[in-house]
Amino acid sequence: MFNKLIIGTDTSPAARTLLDCVNGFRQFGTTDVVLVESSNLTEGYILPTVADSRAVEMTLEEQKKLLERNGFQVESKLINEPLKKTMTGMAEQNENALIIVGAEKQSRTRDMLFGGLAYDIIHHTANPVLILRLYKPEESHKLRNCDFGSHVLFPTDFSPNAERAFTYLEKLVMTEADKVTLLHVWHSQRITETGINVSAQTQAEKHLASMKEKLLAAKPDLEVDTLVIEGNPFREIRRLVEELSISLVVMGSQGTGYISDLFVGSLTHNVVRNVDSSVLIIPAERRKAQRTDVRDSVGR
Image (cartoon, rainbow, N blue to C red; front, side):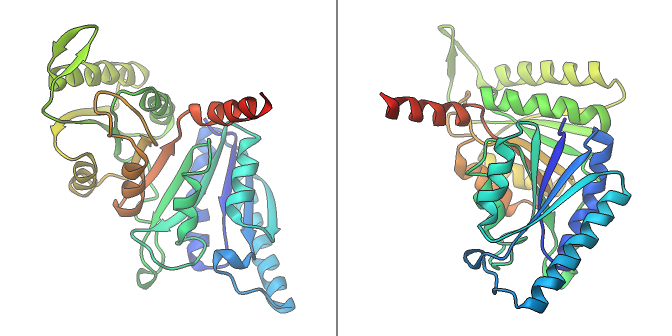
């Protein structure tokens, strides 16, 4: 599913916790890892002294060896530019690369792992991004759930971006997931497709049933639930994450399906910042196309 992991790291205890969790990606066939750390002041770092730089390099080397012992081919980079620029740039060169960063729930600290990097990257990359949810500092920077597949929540609005995200879910269940809940949050208005008025709820139930069949065909022993709920998408996702002990949310970053505002950036932003589980964000393919269109129009 992902042939390379691009990981933002630092010298904190949280970084070690994050790397311990990354080892689970070996079962997906992932072999290559790039560890990236920045000393750029704009990301909240104090410019290291010579001794500090050596300590950073030593920690980076230790992290590299840790992953190598677990079968990864590892490259480490200590850079002087913003992490967002380096990580998104590296990911653009490989569409099968996954960016991984850690983040606290509703964090305000400027620390690289817990600050704005995670939330900034999801708005500036065309690659999938895994936000690993960590406990707060007073809770020793533990991951909330390193067993991503114990219960996966997949919210969908049936848009093209959500359909793309579903292809990642299909690959995930083959190697990792034990239980999946498919979710659609709908409003009471009617929707129209091919000129026929239909109930949003009935239509959604049919789509979710079809998706469930696909997952069970791929993995017959998988436990799959479907939910169609009327309400606010973010509130329902947050509620279900807590009530169902969700380990991972897999979702598209934007979309215009039956509910036109379901996967706009604000929803993704709110989910990443406020839910207790880790979140795998799948950006829309059109982002790359949009950049190409802009270059073409400039050329004209």
